[in-house]
Image (cartoon, rainbow, N blue to C red; front, side, top):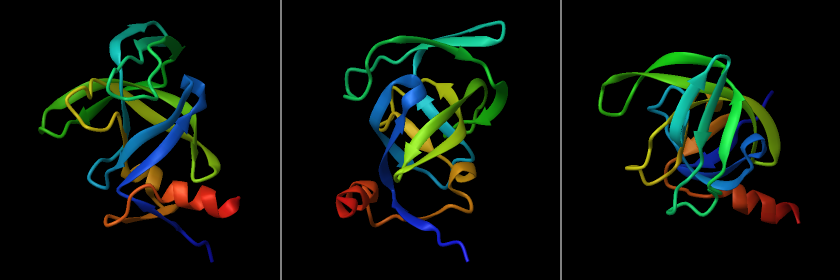
Amino acid sequence: MFKKKIVGRIENISISDLELYDLDAKVDTGADSNAIHCDHIEIDGDYVSFTLLDEVHAAYHGKKMKVPLYQIKKVKSSNGQIQLRPSIKVSVDFFGKKYKTIISLTDRSDMKYPMLIGRKFLSKRFLVDVSQEYLCKQTSKEKK
C-alpha cells in the first residue's frame, strides 16, 4: 500500500526550471491548482515571459524568464473572480523527490506566500497537517 507523506500548511519547494530554490509555499487544500507570483506576464505565441521580482521573498532573483506556454486556463481567484491565467509545466523538488506539475502565473504581490500548492498536486501523494509547518526541512535533516 502506498503511504502518503504528511506536509505542513507552509512548506519549501524548489523549481529548478525557474532557478527558484527553497521558495516558501502555502499548502492550500481550497485551491484546485498551483499558482506562483510573477510580474510583467506576457504571452507571445507558444511562449510566456514573466519576471520573478519580489523584494520580500528571498528566493526570487529578479530574472526575466521565457518558457513554453502550457495552456491558458480559467481560474477562480480567492476573491471569487474568474481570471484567465497562463500556465506552465515545470519540474519541482518537493520532499526530496522531483515531480512534473502545472503552475499558473499570477500577481500574488498582496499575498504573504509567493506560491500556492493546490489539491491536484497534493492528491494521492500527501496529507496536510495544518498544525505543522516546514516538515520538509525536518525530513531532510533526518536523512543526514
